[in-house]
Amino acid sequence: GGGDPIRADLTDEAIRLGRLMRSLLPEEGEVAGLLALMLLTDARRSARLAGGELVTLDEQDRGAWDRALIAEGHLLIRECLTRVASGGPAPKAFQLMAAINAVHTDAPDVRDTDWGQIAQLYDQLYAATPTPVVALNRAIAIAELDGPEVALAIVDSLDLDRYHAWHATRADLLRRLGRSAEARWAYDSAIDATENPAEKAYLTRRRAHLVDP
Image (cartoon, rainbow, N blue to C red; front, top):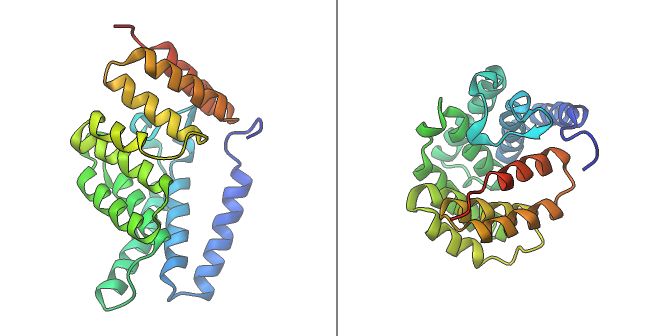
């Protein structure tokens, strides 16, 4: 919320503290996973906004991503995987979320994204953290594998009607299915549910571009 969609001061401080925790707890997989997650998210900072509007992952200029932060995040993920392969505990939520981000940031183009691997990681994440939000994010991957109709059935089964991302996801799936009237209503609900001005601008533009059948 507020006038600044991305609080760079807060993200920088969070990463500083993450690196400090990593130095104090080098064998803790979830500490490494949390730091990797923050690094891989922050690596896309400069590409996430354009003209005051949110730029979604599939539309971002991947050449603007911070490759040094991505390399650091990927190294942490490989360390976590090595620890698991050596008999360590199974990865928990932060490590799995970081691994999902690693798959995304490993793809030079959105068309190269390994959605099968992402869906498998979401399966593991849901087993570790069975929340509706995780199920919603998994449905987005399922849409790329099995189509928007299958994903919409999953999304509609989730009790998340107060969550703006649920409405935004429904809107996009309905748009892809050519159900413009329903998509327009879903975009309106998503716009009403978020206070982030960049996200409001993005959703408003997407709504305006709907084509009536």
